[in-house]
Amino acid sequence: MTKKSELILPALRGIMGDWVFYSCLMSIEEIGSRVSFADDIHKNQKLSEMIQRQLKKGRSDQISSYLQNQEERFFNSLVVATYGGAPNWSALDDLKSDTRTDFVGRLDEETVSSVGFLSLTGEENLFAIDGQHRLAGIKKAVRTGLEQDPPDDISVIFVAHKKTAKGLQRTRRLFTTLNKTAKPVSKGDIIALDEDDVMAITVRRLIEESDFFGGTRIAFVASNNLPATNKTSLTTIGNLYDILTALFTKFDTELKSKKMDLQFQRPPDEELDKYYELASRYFRLLGKSFPALQEFYDANVTEEVVKKHRGNHGGDACYRPLGLAIFSEIIAKLSKDYELEDAIDLASNLPTKLSEAPYKGLMWDPSGKRIIGSNSVTLREVLLYMLDEAKIKDSTLLERYRSALGQEDAQLPERVI
Image (cartoon, rainbow, N blue to C red; front, side):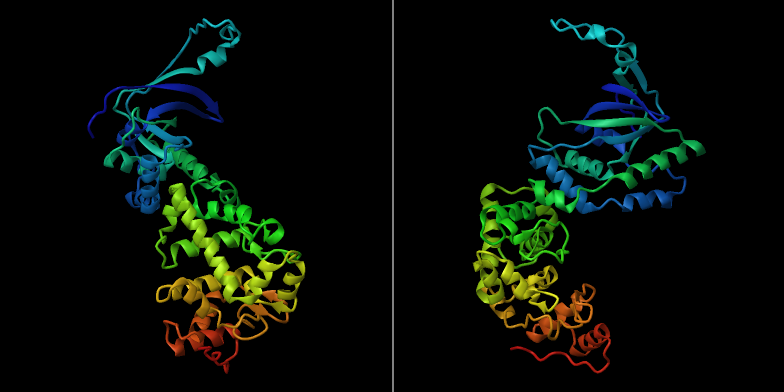
């Protein structure tokens, strides 16, 4: 390995448990060239290779694009282990202040001694034990070229690593602790706060600006589970997010994009407007072709309409999050051969009463008066069969249908066109 030049980093020295750590600022270019992946914490090469296989290429590509294109970019700290070389900590033991409010004289010795510089000789081995996807994105961005002047400073926390049996065990424990306890951002937080995610932005606009989902017309629940006590909403914000994800990534429209691009790369406002217009058009066309949905849109007070179409009696599939999701998947498939309006109109030929085939037994349990979620793929394929649009053999589908229903003599429903 080529020796790197000496590097001096501004740093804070701290202690947590039995770990001494140094919180430093390091340029993105230095990180890209000096820091490696955590492939040296196992003696067994195959175990080290397993760590590398966890690095998803799409994720690193997205992070690289984020660094290159997002002006409001920001990262939390990387945690980097260091061994070899001769890293040296130098505390500032003399601080001066020329301001009228001289706080320096009031600082205790421990506080002053935690401020200083960490010097690296260039002979150290540095590897990330937390933030490996970010590191992969940084390396790609640096490799392909960054137009940053000055280059970004990134917070890096350094910890010491020893290549002894005990040292390897200690570093492995820290690696797994950091990665096990990291909590992903919740779906609810993304919908409520994310300013890059196109689906989240569009969900908020539909709630705030359209007549479809304002007020109590949508349940502020991040999952697809609509509370049984809800009598005013068509669906949940989580389900609306999923439907928009299908609309923007699976429907054959000019706006079709990859999910990861839509989640992490905020497009220009003009393009965001187009996504919102597509979503509004989609729900408007659904209402035009599905009378039960139009009845919901037209109601000033939705409670009576919801009670009519959702309850212990079953009701309309479109008044269930699962039903809306399945119809969106069906229309997505139809959109490959039909214009959006025609695809929706074709799908509207399907039955929607949960008490009838093919929903009864597949999506609706009449005895338990509850929704069944485990047969959604089979239900979707049966509905496509009823439109003469199924891509699997009738005999295969019939076998799956009978298995899901638990009825050996069941027959596929009649086609509707």
